[in-house]
Amino acid sequence: MRKLYWFQNDLRVQDNPGLLAQQDAERLLLVYLFPVNRPWCNVTGMGAQRERFLRESLQSLQRELGALGQNLLVLHGSAELVIPELVRDYGIDEVATTLTPGYYERRTRAALRSRLPVPLRVHEGNNLFREDALPFALADLPGQFTPFRKAVEALPVAAPQPAPTRLPRPPAAGFEIVPGADEKPHTALPIRGGTPSGQRRLRQFIFDERSIERYKHTRNCLNPLEGSSTLSPWLATGALSPREVVAAVRRFEDEQVANESTYWLVFELLWREFFHWRAYQDDVALFRLRPAGGRKRLHNCTFEPRSFARWCSGSTDFPLVNALMRQLVATGWMSNRGRQIAASCLVNELDIDWRYGAAFFEKHLLDFDVASNYGNWQYLAGVGADPRGGRHFNLAKQASEYDPEGHFVEKWQGRQPQQPKYVTDAADWPIVGTE
Ligand SMILES: Cc1cc2nc3c(=O)[nH]c(=O)nc-3n(C[C@H](O)[C@H](O)[C@H](O)COP(=O)(O)OP(=O)(O)OC[C@H]3O[C@@H](n4cnc5c(N)ncnc54)[C@H](O)[C@@H]3O)c2cc1C
Image 1 (cartoon, rainbow, N blue to C red):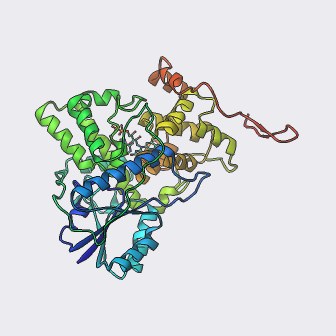
Image 2 (image 1 turned 180 degrees about the vertical axis):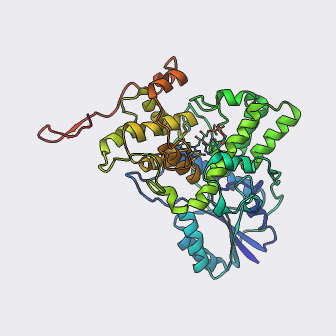
Image 3 (image 1 turned 90 degrees about the horizontal axis):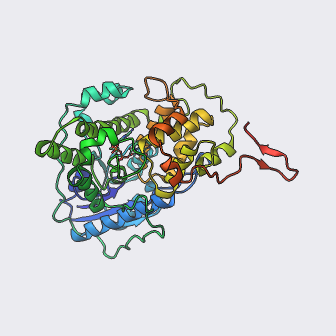
């Protein structure tokens, strides 16, 4: 049987149930499609760092597949159009992929099911738990994190599966190597895409530097690779599976020490889990300004493009927010604390529709993950899973708590706005002014 496996956010050969299920094929075509550019909320395209990291992840996967006698065909175009053509051209009998959250993703699967003349098999593989292991039907999924966590915390997490030693041959040879990006990693976050780099970081964080022992107290650090694990870019691209991370934590707990910090890393992965399952359930509501009420007054019926542009470029009246936004654009990453502060500023100080902020994050984050990004934004804006109905941070207090010496603001030049507050027209009238 000739099979086609479509990689999405599971760019790895180890612990990949979808890929492992292809081993009995007579010929196997492995495919990846670059994300389709869907402009929205004044944002278009993919940030340079995110694109670089993705290209490196694909190059790394190509190398690993090469060692297994395989190759990866990387194309541009929407799956609905490209995959049926490949099925025809290569005489494919079955298509498979890994389940991934998101409204477009679900619609694409439905479109493929109706257009393909062969079956589409969808494997689960990017979460800690399989859907049938959850102690509730997806329709009864708790709307808030705490009841979800309490219900799933004691469930066993499956051990990661090793990579196959060999894969069936591809139906054709000579697919092109994915070209690298011109962009280099920023010196503030010198990391590369792909499983070997992700596994190195996992080892470093847990075993070599034993940073996990203090994680609960350091996780709010604004710099990457210092306080929190910074594993998100590899988890989001799928170069690492969340089960590999849990397995490493469990090994450290068995061999070294188990404490509240080792517990907390798994606790945070449960947030990821929560937002993923919620995204399957919420579907298009994940992108609604106010899906089901929510406390926010949301009086932003006139959109202020100047305020949004200033937030994006790090030119607001808040030096810490400016520094965070510049860190995001330059490196492709921002800490969880930073994301909360920047999001609170957009929603509460600038009164902008949260989806504009989410779209800008989507463009730049190396770890962009539709469920975690839009789920966290809704939570912050008070229209999602937050029992407290949104978070309004006191930005001065946050700055004194998390950047008391101002080193972070200084490093990213948060006190030097790059955009003027007002833009004037030909007759020198302010055409946009907020105060
Ligand atoms: C507005 C906003 C947008 C966000 N967008 C994304 C996104 O697109 N992709 C993404 O992976 N995370 C997102 N997060 C969650 C979180 O900020 C990042 O996962 C975290 O900062 C990544 O750094 P780390 O790997 O060092 O995290 P650690 O603190 O080391 O946590 C370990 C892992 O747990 C998971 N995790 C931790 N916190 C969360 C959380 N709040 N929600 C979901 N998963 C979590 C991540 O997979 C992370 O890699 C967002 C948070 C906010 C407030």
